[in-house]
Length: 246
Length: 246
Image (cartoon, rainbow over all chains, first blue to last red; front, side, top):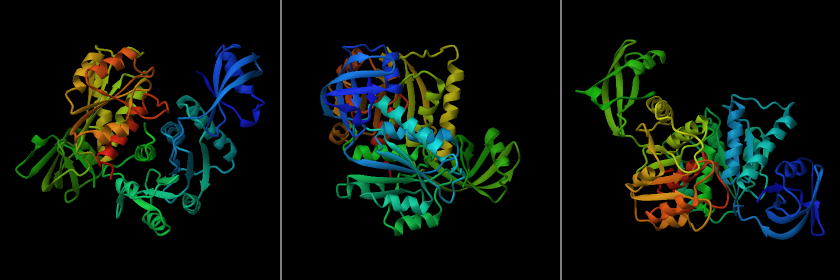
């Protein structure tokens, strides 16, 4: 059944109103009155609806049933990455993280980031990132559109991470705990931050800072993962460990 | 320390001889007599060597130490995918699977494969796939170069999978076990097959055939993963579950 995202406010009195791009999309899919669609309110609820009236600009549908979206994980993981070089890598991280169940994707700047975030083009860039998230969310049947954020510098990143129940800092060298040890030994958590570095990894002082401020410094084994691969592998492991993969 | 792969036969009497592309690479990296390199014998051993003589065509190095390559997982996972459309997806599956620890990557044809494998261009295609694997293996510090294979049709795929200790068939619908249940409930395994479908997924009869012949039909949750994402997520979960991620 076709899935759409709709702002919760457009559902009222047992009726849903779709406008703009979504109405157009209904038109393109040749859906007609009597056809059923699923509308996600982007907050984790699915509205099963039957189209009652449809034009290119506006579609009206009757709400048949409201259910919690079963595809949403019960742990909210924030994937936080040092900004990689090249938009193909950021795009890739966003798309795959959304599929694999991330709650949000954040980028930040740190010592070895080669790429610079263009603050002037900020809103355009964020718009593009959100669009990639939205597409991936639709395609994979998510109940929310994971937010994509620019966090600023490394201190801002750590501050943000420490708002979560647990902060996991993926590091390739030095004293580390295995991801298994950390996840098995942790009290149940509802929110988690997973921090991975840019192409050149993290500087030693950044890892020290993460440790001092309370991050768990984690190893994912002796294989060296590319900066765009590490977040997906870590996220998949966390989803598995928390029972959200099946 | 720079890592190279070398055929085991070129190491004899405590000396290693590098030729061709590898010798050129040593030259490009401006490595000189006295510099150390790691040579992997592609069978899981690392040879720490010191260069004693070097030209563009041939490099001679003294073996200082032989150690098992610590980056190799203790479970050999065969990632087996229905051939996707577009070489960017096959390339992606190979590269990411190698990073995440696959022992080999196999492609096969099945009902909903849109892409056709060009049997005439077979050797050229396989050569290209192996090169991608080799590059990813070098970059991620693997101790082997994971093989990349073309298995043929779906029956050949199942026959091949059943040579492994356990065969996991990832399916998006119908009666399935969660990946957690399957992995937690399985006796220790040394080899595993992970089977994922092409863009359109598997036909019902293919899933039935997999079940009848002894595959475990697995769910990875309610999110719909793209054909190039599913193998990486499944592989990461298996690596985590078997203690090979940290």
